[in-house]
Amino acid sequence: MINLILATDKNGGIGFKNGLPWPSLKKDMEKFKSLTSNNICIMGSKTWNSLPKKPLPNRINVVLSSHHPSNFFGADMVLGQDTIKFEGYINKDIFVIGGANVYKQFRPYADYIYLTFIQEEYMHDTSISFGHLLDNCIITEDKVINQSNEIFYHLQEYTCRIDLHDQEMIPDTV
Image (tube, rainbow, N blue to C red):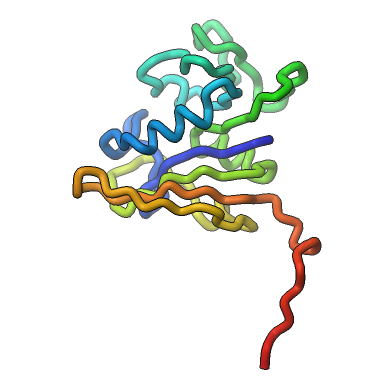
């Protein structure tokens, strides 16, 4: 199963100066850890470089990059964009954790999206498009979090890759 996991502000901002644009969000970090632990985390080289602790513990860390693997000490795998293969990882889910280009590359294959949506605007230099991200997805969970009466955000889950032809058709009412 392929999952995208990310946090954005209300304008789609996901990064600023190789870090997160907002202060640490406790429930967001807890959810990230619980979902990604003991699974495969795929990231681009900028996301790898932005990690405060490398590698992410209790996860298979995969970096997508054209740079030499020696540039990513501690990563379990460094792969070119066209060489992604995960045979032998039975009972492991794949979590794409950034950045913007990696989300875009994997979006067509995503089964689920775990989105932390922050109801504020932050200075950012990296963003994603909500239209592209949430196309053909249905929201299945939305928890509103109020952190210290300062930051309001949503922990949302979306189901994607829905075959609309298999869904029951509801006739229009007149």
